[in-house]
Length: 359
Image (cartoon, rainbow, N blue to C red; front, side):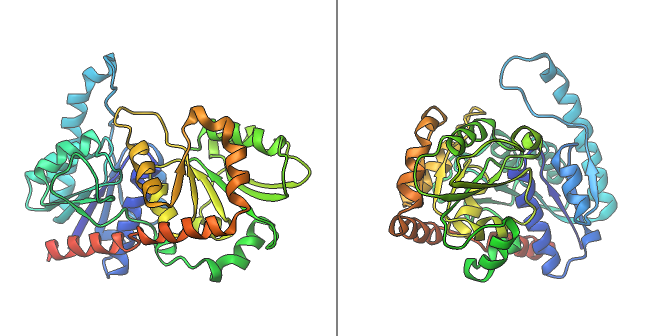
């Protein structure tokens, strides 16, 4: 009984796919029976590092503007579909899931012509173009928000998160997390991250905040992104601000256990924020045409779990941090609201559906 997981492009697609893969393993499926499909970006490292077979395709995303590179897309999609079809047949794959991104369409095309059951998982409140197209071939569609648009047959299960986040217990992890970053328990701690690739606008705003801070002492854990690690390694901070910076953090459970408030993008991180019950200042990315991060962020704000701050409003970040970080009642109210909308069992629910379909 073999399975296929297609996820490509960014951590927002790849890490939920990895969570489903690990949930399949936890349910008794051998890693060798779970083939992962993608391109040459983060997925080409992530899945092999976790012991999963990986099919690397030559494929790229659609440019939203009229761009000459779009002319080659139909040929690349057809080539990818043929390779995916061959993989499905050679491995006798019984269930396939596409997690979004440019690999979704050829995966859906291939699965629809096979005997395998096909599933689509959407991570955002506004469905991406690839998932909207692929959903026409899907047996079931899973969505991360109850108000997801563009996928009328979507079932709200939540966005898959890794097991260490799904089972998160801040009290149990707190001491280890503080030691991990060299933090003090009695000082409030701000966490900052912009997704797997980092976010320049957030990094710049946080560097300015740390250097010019005027207020009570606080600590900060900032995940700047691998590409920005050298840029901010020696960034100055005020005397009463301690900063622990990392390019990337494989132990996100420790990151969330160490902090009291997070400044983050509003992609796949939203599922981690709710699963860990972490109050959030959300700075939605303004890339892409669907505005999906804005919709994700608005959902948390309406639930009382976060505050949305647009990029043009980042100069006001210091005031907002000063307002929230030192207000334990406000933080606890936001944390409770986040936990109330969490769906930490999404990976297990999706894995269970795939196993049932394959049986």
